[in-house]
Image (cartoon, rainbow over all chains, first blue to last red; front, side, top):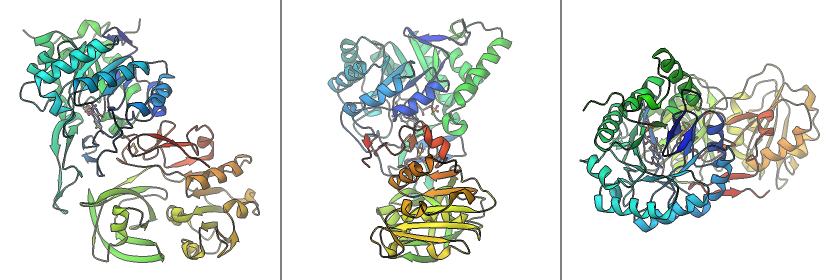
Length: 302
Length: 249
Ligand SMILES: Cc1cc2nc3c(=O)[nH]c(=O)nc-3n(C[C@H](O)[C@H](O)[C@H](O)COP(=O)(O)O)c2cc1C
Ligand code: FES
């Protein structure tokens, strides 16, 4: 067995690196290429009931080459138009995780059932997009609603269900507990932020606000993974600012079973997946770590 | 976001203008910038000059491009870039094939050694055919108001292509596909500038991808060999929402 093998909710992964939702995952051919080039699995971009064009450009702001703020605005073709992309992506024979967003438990359940029918290996519930009214974090900050969404989706599908939570709320643990019927948590989504161009005297993003991602949010992600793992013991997928093997191992020692990679695809290109596997494998070898499983949560102090 | 001052505006055709601005950054033919009109939008535009003085050549087709065509000398222009993989440069004779505003990204490749096929719907819309210096010029129009009536293939089929070190092609995808199909039978070296919707320009949003390659990063210039393996080229693309549509040629 390869020391990089791991698993999440029974889904076997060749390595701990999954493409995060919203990055290179709208076109089936792109997901297939990212999988063929070394990602263990991909998460689709978040898909809703109806087609949305998203916000006007600018939808991203680059910050010193490695970090960014985005407000894509949940652009998506609508679930009924997404079957072909799923089919193309699944030709890679690796797990494709379907990310969905809605505003009610019924919508989430309907979307999840369609993703399951398209062959998704798991569902990721977007309870955390920070920049669209009526969706994401607005839904994900109401514990009663979160509980009913997770409950309804769990009743509706057989595949594992992951709850992706927001760092932009006062008490993530309260929401994590409300979502405890989920098979795993995905932590974290972007941190709500903005950028102003002083020469234009205006916010750069057309939506003014967006979500900050990249290495600058890693310490925030590490803290949430650590805390939620320590308090709930549940499986966690770590996301936020991972670019190197050291970053990945830090998340795993904080409690993650595997990790998702987003913004590093911008700074390092699609090659990031091969690079991460290589670096992580080398560190594990020199640190005499035989498997990912043996270090999950290794840093947690009680 | 960077900004600079517009130093000149040139009318090229009744609908196309070239905006000149100073930007010392090194950039190569085939690369593009994301030009921002604060409060209106941001769009990808190829550089039509790549020296210290840069330029973009713009046709009004939406709110942001319309606002750019209205920039005046002294206005501020906001942008980021340069992005994309450039054309490869060769020494010796080359052929340019430009359709409509596609000539914009080919302009920096013009030398005394380049021949060109410049095509457009009408004579008035032929772009930069007055810039071809020394080399042979073939004009092609849909309506026959100048040069050959028809499409670039009607000119291409009269030319001995063997003598060119490289053929550079830029224009609407339907034209690229026709030129590709024509050249595909030969051993000609050719590079094509492709176009897709671009939202981020930096390889994350997936709106510009063709067969898993991001035009904003891996392109927008692709060699004829690279295009050969692509299932999406000339066949399908995604809209703003990510919905797949079929190109019916
Ligand atoms: C351009 C962009 C689009 C995103 N779209 C989504 C999305 O549709 N759904 C979602 O759950 N997260 C989305 N995210 C958040 C990422 O999945 C991830 O949680 C976040 O970027 C932190 O990871 P990173 O620092 O590795 O990018 C998006 C992020 C970026 C940069
Ligand atoms: S424009 Fe976003 S990936 Fe190319």
